Length: 113
Image (tube, rainbow, N blue to C red):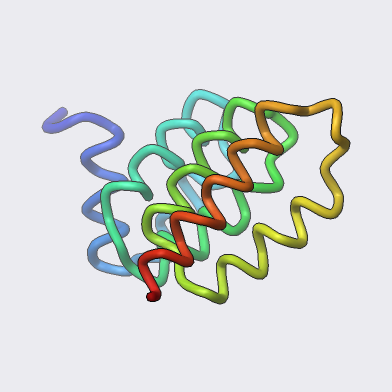
């Protein structure tokens, strides 16, 4: 097999191949979803943003954290709205996630300035 799973994900993201990403990775095991969230942070495409928009709602907080951080890096004002909605639904007790959301919103907005 040539290349890592994350490299394959990046190629699918670069090509905008939503069907492959959804079928093979988006609803796979947690390690695969985590790798997908990491790969999305390296490729700024509409598909990457859409995938991260789904993964910020992942049931596993470690995946949410990576997705939130990367959405802040590659996201736009549209994604800020998604992050704000997530903030509204996130309990204050999840301090690490709350802080990551605040940082991601700030990062995404600074890019648009």
